Amino acid sequence: MERRAHRSHGIALALSVAGATAWLYHAAPALAAPLAALRHQLGVVDTVPGGRVALTFDDGPHPLATPAVLATLAERSAPATFFLVAEQAQRYPHLVREIVEAGHRVALHGLRHRNLLRLGRRATRNDLLRGAAVLEDLIATRLRHYRPPYGVLNRTALETAAEQGWTVWLWRRWGRDWEAQATAATVAQRLTAGLRAGDVLLLHDSDAYAAPGSWRATVGALPSVLDMLEARGLEPIALPD
Image (cartoon, rainbow, N blue to C red):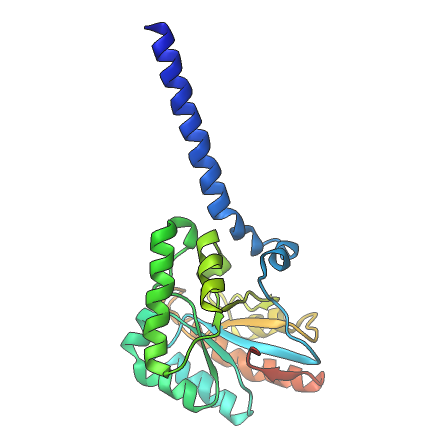
């Protein structure tokens, strides 16, 4: 009996170790968000070439924020990339079309706004592929870019992106515009302090997954951010292919 119990304990321990190893392999790409050096090893991109800066907006579309952002971008002839959540795109399909008609780029942020560390392989793949199908149906073209919610990746997301031919993007600077205490001034300061050519800027044109009303700080900050880019001779662009 003692020998049998010892053997059962050994099998259980081996299975536990194997499970932990598999989870670590699946979750390891999440370190790309805090560790910039790891991003390049994983093929994750966070800069653009030349004397330019990329404007990116996550979490939309939103019935109030997205039109306000589009209006400011139109006034300044500034292109941007919108990483859309497909469940929001289904609610506001006319805004997706407005983004495209204004000359901006639509990219994938997922079917739903979920932390990929909470999803297994099947759920991750389902989220990305279903989300892409929704957006591609609305814009009538193939997607080229993907960014995970919270900047948190897993192995399956990277594999799915590679299989679909998507570039995986993170960012160099963010405005923390999702926070309840964010203001136009704090968002603009965080984005532009130390701003350099090649930076990818992260903003949000929605409060669907953030503090209610936080999008107003984004809209308020955007003119100042564009002014700073112009003053420094940095061209705002959408993400390149």
